[in-house]
Length: 175
Image 1: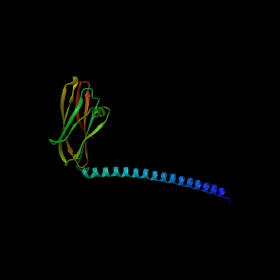
Image 2: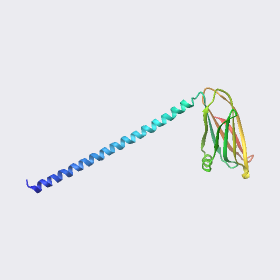
Image 3: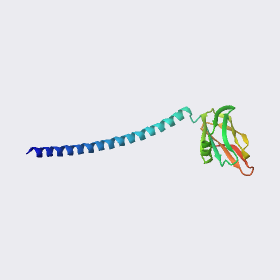
Image 4: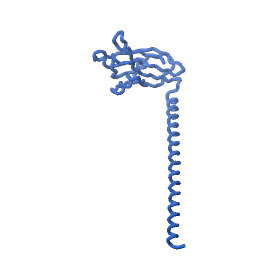
C-alpha cells in the first residue's frame, strides 16, 4: 500500500466517522429536545395542580364565597369602578381601565372577589361608579341578602341595559 492510498483511506475513514458522529449528535439533540418538551408539560401540569390545591387550602368549599362581575351591552353605562362590601365590610375596590371595560363589554366575566365566609345569613352590597346616559356621572348600588351554607357560594353582579327605561340595571344573582 502506498502512502497516497493510505492517506486517502484515512481521510475516507475520518469523514465516515465524522458523519456518524454528526448523526449521533443530531439524534442526541432530538432526544434531549423531546425530553425537555415532556418535562415542560409535566411542570405545567404540576403548576396547575398546585394552584388548585392552594385554592382548596386557602378557600375550602365550606367557607368559600366567589363574586363575579359581568356587563351586558353597556350602552347606558360606562363602568369606571366597583366597590364590594360583604356584611358592611369592604372586601374589594376595583378601578377599571378602558381595555378591561372593553373586555367586559365583549362578554368577559371578572372574578371580582374570592374569600372565606362563615355559614349563615349575609348581605352583599356593590357600588358602581361610571358614566350614565348622556355622559353624566352615575353612581348606583345593588344589595342582596343570601344564606351561606356548607357548599361554596357563587354570586354574579350583573350590569345590563334596560331599553324600556333607557337606564342601566344593576342586579345580584346566585349562581
